[in-house]
Length: 221
Image (cartoon, rainbow, N blue to C red):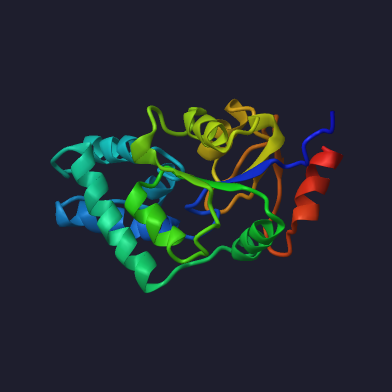
C-alpha cells in the first residue's frame, strides 16, 4: 500500500501566524479597560496571546474594572479587531505566498483559530473560496487551545490522521495544542517566545518558505 503524500493537510493558526492581529487585540483590550477606568499594559496583553478568547476575557474581568460577562468582553474586542482588519489586512511575511502555493498544489488546508467565526470570516473572504477546506474557531469547540480539541476536530473533518499533517503556529499555547493532538508542528514565534517543544520545530519566518521546505524540515527532524 502506497504511503500518503506528506503532508496530508496543513493546519493553520491565524492570529500572529497568517495575519499580524496581536497588536490589534492589545489595542482593543487597552481601549476597553481604559474606558472602564482601569489600566492595561502591553505585558498584560502579551499574556493573552494564543488563549481561548473567553479565558482571556475572564482574566480581564478579574483584573480590571470591566463589567459584564466574558462573552460581552469578547464581543466588544472582536468588533474592534474586525474593524481594524477590514481597514487593513496585516499579512505576516511569507504566509500568503505559502498559502497560495499549497492551494495550487492541492494540499488541503484548515484554519484552526481561537478567534471567533466573524473574525475568521474576515480573513477567509480575502482569499480564494477554495483555500480552506474547513474552519475551526474558538466559539465552536468544547475546549480551546492549549487543549488538542481544535486540531483533532480539524483533522477529523478533513478525514486525515493528525500525524500526517503539519500545523503552523506562533504561540506557546497554540504549539501545545497542536503537539497534544499529535500534529507535527512548525513554530514561527512572533510576539512571544516559544520554548523548544518535543514534536515541534522552530522556524524564524515563513518568508521564502515553500512546500518542499516544509517537507524538508520534518525529513531532517
